Image 1: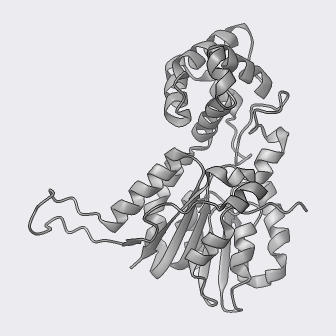
Image 2: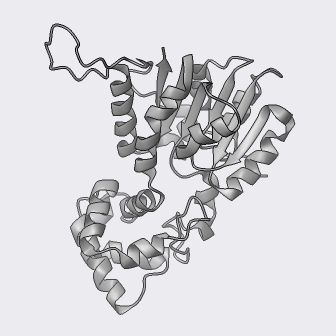
Image 3: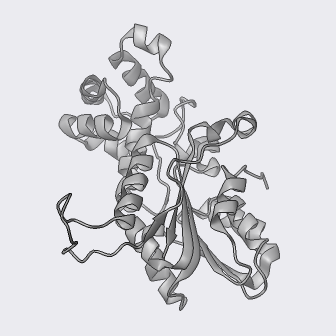
Length: 311
């Protein structure tokens, strides 16, 4: 089995403060890199729960974590259901949670999964959970021009979103858009040649936008983070690794709101709203990968780690 390199591993494990007899959860299990490091620090009294919606990731992590025996429980689900699936296992609170967001190496490295724009014949799939019927092809071929524009603008942060949406709609009137290569050529035609020559890959932002939309990535994160913080025991920590500004901004905002939920007007002498802080933001600035890690693992370059501790 190919061993994938977990991003910001040392830093995440250090901030997690693993207790040997604690209960820990990885909501984005992937290949089990972070999980393996956590489990190796647990005693026989410790428990670990790994959650992932991807069947291939479940298979790979199950193999990697097999040596840790009964202290490990692996669940196929979306981390959005973390509280629910833990309650089903009679776990009401935990000592630590890890989220390593974005696309896993298993998904990126397999062209059949359709996450990459670098393989022209790759299908437009992009489903993180292949039990889901809707694919990226459905988004590209059925969304209206206005829907596509907002999606590419908001989730891809692409200044040519309007033109890209227009070109997609025009192209699909002739024939259905089926592959990464077909979509990439359409996107290229919508972006000025001068910009294509100086910027990164022209399809990167649009592919990101489609993936976020299809898998509800930001919605799942926004719906889940407050509940995950509530799952933590006093002194428990949640470590979240993000890979683009939209995720990072959301985590930063929600962490701050949990630290200071007061809604009283600024300068109000006494708090009357009754909102109580759930804890402390441990990382005032995001933790970034070291130069050595970025050289060894180029995918880590955009990674940011933020940590919150429950009180």
